[in-house]
Amino acid sequence: MSEIVVKVTRGSLIESVHRADIAVVNSNGNLIYSLGNSYKVTYMRSAAKPLQTLEIILSGAADKFSFTDEEISIMCGSHQGEEFHRKTVEGILKKLGLNVDNLLCGSTLPSNREYSQRLLWNHAKLNPTYTDCSGKHAGILSVCVLKGYDLEDYNSPEHPVQREIKKIISEVCSIREKDIIIGTDGCTVPVFGMPLYNMALGYSRIASGNGLPQDYNKAADRIFKAMNNAPEMVAGTDRFCTDLIKNTHGKLIGKYGAEGVYCVGVRGSGLGMAIKIEDGNVDRALWPTVVKCLEDLNVLDQTESKSLGKYRNRQNLNNVGEKIGDIFPDFNLKKNL
Image 1 (cartoon, rainbow, N blue to C red):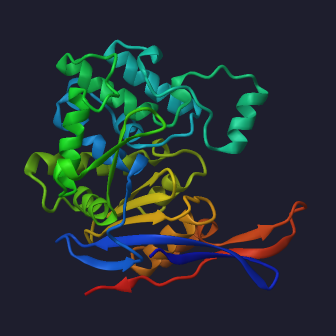
Image 2 (cartoon, helix red, strand yellow; image 1 turned 30 degrees about the vertical axis):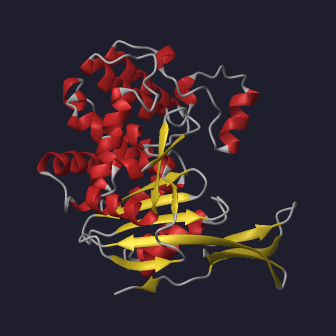
């Protein structure tokens, strides 16, 4: 059963709680810390993007089209549709000889409410480059162009590029392809359902290289470095994934997935972590849980913890900005070894 990770107070009462399941594995694939059900099956959602991007490198598309760290990073990211994000996606498409009409991710407002309000106020004309998954879609299209695959249905689970991506994820996460549950993401491509343990294992491997064939290891290293060299492409200005990577100085990668999923891979220790918030909450529950876990695992030093403090503890405010309570993590990971 999921366990309480975050509490929300109003006055002297705990008014709400958020529950989660967590798996932490080491580079040998041992489950070393957990909370709740570490084998809970859920969808990786966008936390799968760094693993999906392995296909762009392994296929040869990254070298063929001379993708930069910024371009590889945005393929791994869920960006905010800021101008530099849109220009980066447009640059990828230009290298491919394609345009925004080839993207099948839809045209949506960014999840950043303040930025979305500005776009609406300025009557911005949305196109697929504003959508958070457009970098991933552009990356997938690069493989299709390289291999001569059909561009019209690259989002179908039966398309060869999607079958190749599924095979890669199966190998990296040590789960049989037939055991991966396929759903459809908001951006129309397949999503992968599997136990949290396997997600954590995949992130341990992509960060450390342990347990991967040599070509996979090199591709994983390229992704890890790209995300650290261009963290602004992973999420955006004042966004958690970007701030986490930027403030940990090359030691980890972290990636958010919708409905309260988060995965982290730590380079030096080879730790991999996967979190699922039971009710899917992000701002109140997911960010505090991630930071608290990394502190408990001694991944963050004092300076890094301080730099991420605004995500760990928040004030519960009323309509006029007065503090009427707190939002804070309250749990301890359970050691399994």
